[in-house]
Figure 1 (cartoon, rainbow, N blue to C red):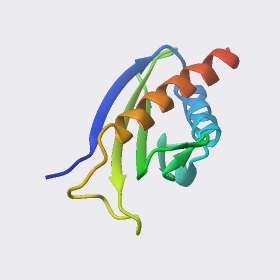
Figure 2 (cartoon, rainbow, N blue to C red):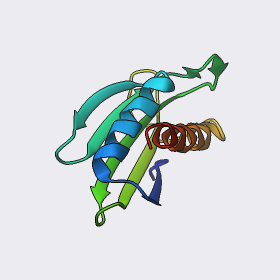
Figure 3 (spheres, rainbow, N blue to C red):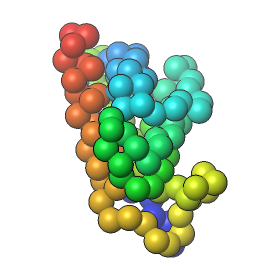
Length: 118
């Protein structure tokens, strides 16, 4: 059983701008981008167990797929997975609320980035 959390969100902005905003949001949250491909809209990043001075207690991996759904609209699919100390997906022992916190902070930072680049 996977502990990954999957969310989809429609955003009123072109895919390229959302991609740039997502990269900036990850950087603002002190995440490390492992892979990014602007042409396919895919980003893979890892977050340490300490983000913005707050100790969350576990590492988290976030994978994003950003697609344009027509002109000024985009679709973002986010998959967040809790990781162990070696960087492997956790199979059990997840700290309650950590993955949800990272997801919530990411969406908030993405919205902030998009608002500032409008």
